[in-house]
Length: 219
Image (cartoon, rainbow, N blue to C red; front, top):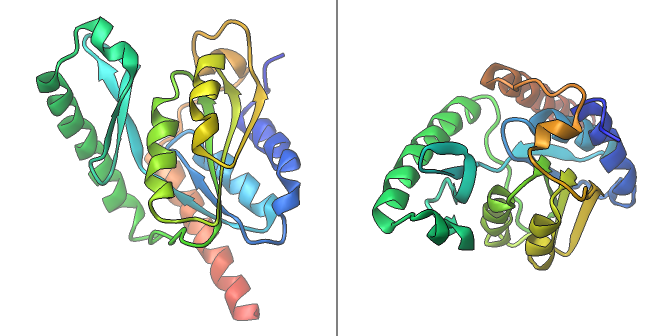
């Protein structure tokens, strides 16, 4: 049964993670689609929201097919299937450069309204709307792990069986609402699956920063 939209999926994930409510979890979204979800989840769990900047490396001639991923520090993950597509080091270097340019642009947009939150010592929930190959979630979990969270959780609405198996050993907990037998694309599991713009992300980050400031003043 498909989800109505990302908002419904976020509420269902928050219910699964309700045990972390009151522990000020840090909910990190993989931009851009997961940012609205992280916003809802952070509110429900009484935590904070931020982004973890990673981007998939697209296959030659098939940019939507992930052969790997890169984080904003330049750490690259390449999937085992990349070799079967004839992908070499030269192509990966070019693709890494292109995707890091996108990540640098997003960081420049997001930081002025929402400086990065340090995940060190925090309960951290990394959320994405769906996981097809697992590449971007792998990079996200690796990027957060080196910053030493006290507990690392991966959360998603839907994932392929292969991707779920790959990430299970990379987090203390993996929460996934649906694991379909046949998986073509994340969008097939949502009745409404609009693109999320940078403008929407910035608006949500501003709102979360404003609420955090109000809470701190009241405290």
